[in-house]
Image (tube, rainbow, N blue to C red; front, top):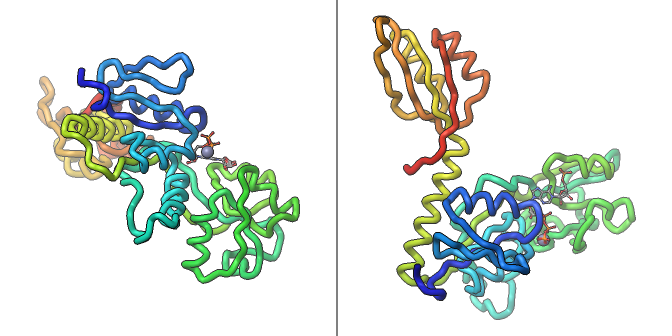
Length: 305
Ligand code: PRT
Ligand code: ZN
């Protein structure tokens, strides 16, 4: 295995919504690791990749400062920090990107939304002129308000933003929503979406040594493969020859199917195909209506494009 300075360091959330999903992603990419006694580092055993477990808010800076080569954090955190870094006085040109976003991953989905007191007078962001918005994302919200020419005061909260209107600290909020239960429980109504967020993979903007770059490329390819597999299904069925064209149209995101003869049947064939999108019950029912039978849907274990 290559020496220490050539090992890739990837920062992920230590304990929170993205922790298990990020570790699971890396494991599915083939990484086996041992965690240090303090649980802050996981050393890769079979790949030159080590994991740093930190607070999600620290991840963008660790990648910007080249302490880590890669990092995974929600786009909400990444974008907030990106705007903050670009605004720092030592970034004179205001142009230097602190890191590169290399992938949007397939977990951690949520949206950053405005929300207004239910039954109140405010029902759109336009109505916020001269009023106060509480948020944990002052840069993203400030940027949105400026772009929409709305003159509202942004009040920074470090947590529990949803209680701000009830406490009389703000007239509206802008916070992350996934199911909407928290808004409902606090008598707030969801408004405009500012940002659709999901877990995001960041990379240092600096060049990395060739060996490291090689492993990074391999890791990215495996991540793509893992995400593709999670969506993909292998479908097998018997079908009448005359219905093949219709059946192909019914299969979401499929490549050319394999069509095989069936023993002692002239007018029916076996069709095998990989679908790169989720296959729902409706699709199977439509296939059956088109004449297919013995339909099997199976998960795909690994895939390399
Ligand atoms: O300790 P650390 O700083 O690392 O963690 P954290 O508390 O800042 O983050 P954590 O673990 O709560 O979330 C990590 C990331 O998960 C976020 O940055 C988002 O990218 C993503 N994520 C996905 C969410 C949600 N869904 C989510 N629902 N983050 C927070 N929420 C909160 C939201 O703030 C609100 O309080 O859940 C509540 C709303 O949920 P619903 O389902 O009631 O709408
Ligand atoms: Zn955080």
